[in-house]
Length: 316
Figure 1 (tube, rainbow, N blue to C red):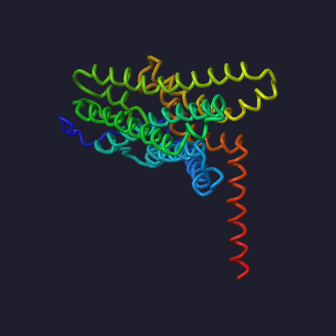
Figure 2: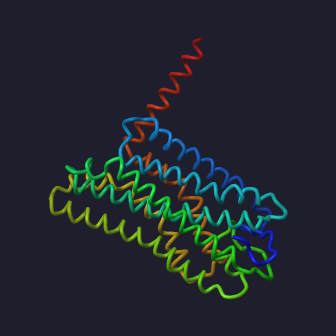
Figure 3: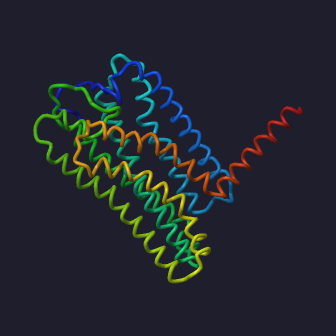
């Protein structure tokens, strides 16, 4: 995976070159990062530790929380460092590594959301067979499959990008290393890379999205055919509300970035990238904890046990 040129580093220009804004942006993004890690870490903790949440739905939610912690960690620490750095440099290997994990975690999350939609489809449309269909073996296989596909999809991008020749400016007009900004700096023919980005990445992003929509369409049709009670319909759909909100929050900026014809260095693309790499991982645990009674109850039990333990230690 060695580049054919003597490039050793790139410069990440970040979200703005206005020095006066950088300290304020540092505080904002640091707060978002802390909330994201703590929130997703809390969800992951209760899913693992509470036996009442050892169900397929929460197994996949734990995977989502793990992904979001890693996803924000891929880009945010380097962004925070560059707010106070005069060089804003990232090594060639570091850039390719960041690109790899960004696409690895992003594509895995897209596919995981489709798996979670399938879980809701089985739970609502095949409730009597749910425990048989969504058994531990199938859930594990689906999780391993989406993580594996995501890894090799990202490996394809990182290998193909690392083999490009880079000439002229090594300034990346972005706050992290992504394929589109790097292709703008490459010399020679990048048609294959563009095709991989538009076709392969587009398929991996939009394929799960369409499957998710199909799952929800089937759920709604099935519910309408089985019940004519608005309250029963609303109660059944409420179990999908958190997941559907997460899907919308995740896919809105992704669709904007990879379907639009805007260049990878545009301000619009940077705003969209901030949404799905920074804001979305922070919102996911908030959405699930605010709307999910089981997760809120599990969190209360964890906090109650922690408080009781603190009182016990203080007593002695």
